[in-house]
Length: 337
Image (tube, rainbow, N blue to C red):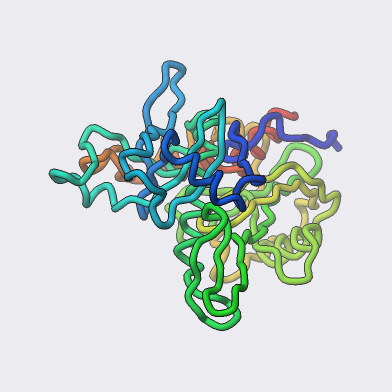
């Protein structure tokens, strides 16, 4: 059996260079004082923001001065943090595709991208800002009423909490833990599976949500058994990554299973699963990912979205893109042999 492997780099959405400034959120006077010289990350309802390509090929969020949104902090704005003396806020803006008209504040030359499409290409500064902004703004829109009595809520603490107007009950952003596990045979094969809703050829590692009262390790064992019918051992933590779609935290593990076990696919959840050799995996990694091989291309005035190419026989194993921790896990295992 080969030695255990580990992630060589942080997953792309786990990178950040911004100080979240948690200690000042409960100081309204200080929070207000940050606005005049702040920079704003704009996020539309589809989770997209304008980006600019850097000399090294990475993408950087195209933030704008706060004065473009007025002299006072707009409702719903969230304090993202501070870096090198600059404070950053996140603000929800209208849909970019529907706002390219005179006086809208949008430019047809701006390139709007979301985390799924371009998160893997963002620099660490932008990855931290946009991941936090998407998570917080989405949570605010889903937490408008108190979970205790249904009363309206209003944002406090620079957007990091909601206050029940009836009973002063505070609520905070919620994160749903989800395990994601690379199952291998301890030698040169890895187990991959695909969901029925995915286009032909897409495969990834196993994943599932942690249930109430369940440990992470127990979740790994349960989900592997439920989804593909295998018993796993040597469950090892690899790393984690925020996945704000809308509020998950992907917690990565590896585990070992006997490839002689019959695969029993979970009906409605798993369409196919198969063991793949290390060489096959390396070839698929070199061939590209879900975005590059299925043809994500520009669409609309803001260059958002894309049209997939028709799947062909040479695309029978298409792997996750660089934005996902699954990609980092597969790359690390492929390099360990």
